[in-house]
Length: 390
Image (cartoon, rainbow, N blue to C red; front, side, top):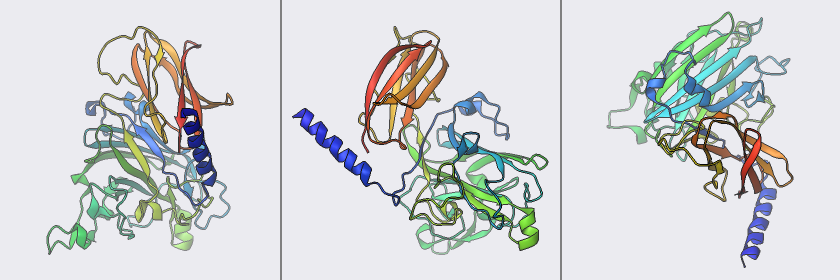
């Protein structure tokens, strides 16, 4: 009976997997570790050790592209005008920490510049929501009347961090607190702290933020996205148009100019400024978690190397894995499919003794059985089977 039931489940899984088409969008999920607020200084310098374990939003790195953008009058471009663009994410109670690093080319077509106008020059949007089922209004006002729950976004222009550029904003009926509460100027400083650093000679722009969010708590989740535009002095001078929108989600991996699968709009800016349907999901770890960590919060030393069963199992698409390390050792935690092909390396570093935990997100892999191996100083100590059911 059990074997027959499993075969039936696997048959359904295969059928479901094969039925997935180009019209389906899979929301990206990122695990964000907790940090002690005292360990972070908001100064636009990412020199605190905690950032090394932060959740990743890698838009442009040496590993490739995870960005949807367009060329805006510069059809000769073969890739976006950046050396790097990425964010790191941490959380503390009621606070999301974001460090955004942008390294833009400095040449005769583009560099970092701002005119002081809302829709000109380089722009950065930091978008948040704990109500992904609630639509944005579809206007390009940042939905700021929905802050801090969201969906809404911060608009960053150079060293200015604002909500709708500090302009007086109409408040839709459902967000009005009183009958005469129809317009308001929203101040970003009421829900966030930040620091920026700008080097126009090298094109490096760093923005570090501590954002109040009521859903930044253990085992909770919020929607999150990054967007903006590339400023082009050349385009501004020739066409009177100085921006080229980009967005982290949605994306076509390693193909920044490719149109994402339907029904994605052709304008990348739409998916930060006016719509939250494809924002990523930030998953906050349990109390005491900081990347690869000791989730028990005590000082007990395990008696042996042990890879514990993942939870949940079966899972879709994320699961947590804990493992015990009795002494300091070089630890490798890797996942293989049934063909013996490595599909993920979750840990590859020297760890101290204790119980550690890691979250694996398998959103880009097909349903099926996977095997996780724990190695200590090059020797396999234990393994576990896991079932991904989509």
